[in-house]
Image (tube, rainbow, N blue to C red; front, side, top):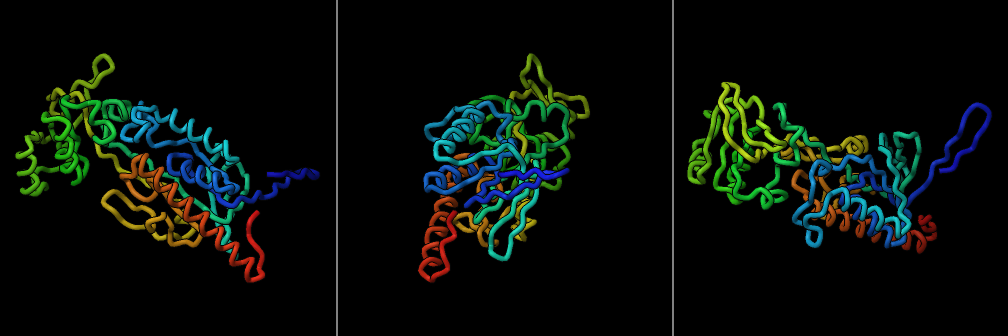
Length: 329
């Protein structure tokens, strides 16, 4: 950005990039890496709110299994900088698309930037049930994904806190990692659970406990139990909770992008490359779905970036061939 100082005020001039990536997680950094290697001028806007921030390690990513998430992101930032990608710690608060199909992005700092293409990789936020103690243990022994953490807590006493109809599915799937599983119905009425689901729970050996959960029991900085409002306590070492996902789709909504309803919330509707219904805009990572793990998000960022680069290459060639001039910076 350049600034011109005049009497009484500072005038900011909009900087132009070929691609602005909003979101500095696995999807955004992966897109930026591919675009940087394609010699594109790229800006990554990172608000610094990674979904996996509370977790000590990431799992299931080949060659990075067990790596701390903060270390993973730090390495990603180092890699994109090698290719001239600019990264700024800021938040995109507004965006608009002009008649030429380019995008004006306003950052919280007041900095205006302009892009030919836009990648939205803003992810989602997990809203936890309002049960005392759960937020403090989130990512440690209060978990949501057995593929992320199941191996580390295998064969321990699992609890599953019912939060929705999907909690039955969660209770059934975690039996692969432990045969000692209790489903706490919490605010779910047992009469509302289909008989077929109750039969499956029984067949899987899942114990079903009715009654609202009042809190968890923690001793010596370890989860040791689940306490109900009737005063009873149940020994458990791990509690699985299905959070309410809140996709960060505000920028896409401002642009009028199509969204789609899923059992886990409303997400960006995209094609196989991450292309949204708005020309020039791609979405990747948890912006497009609840179950996009880090490895999936990185792959989605790669696909989006390769598609964007190809579109820019051939679009500029066609423009030059027709006498309109290329749009490259």
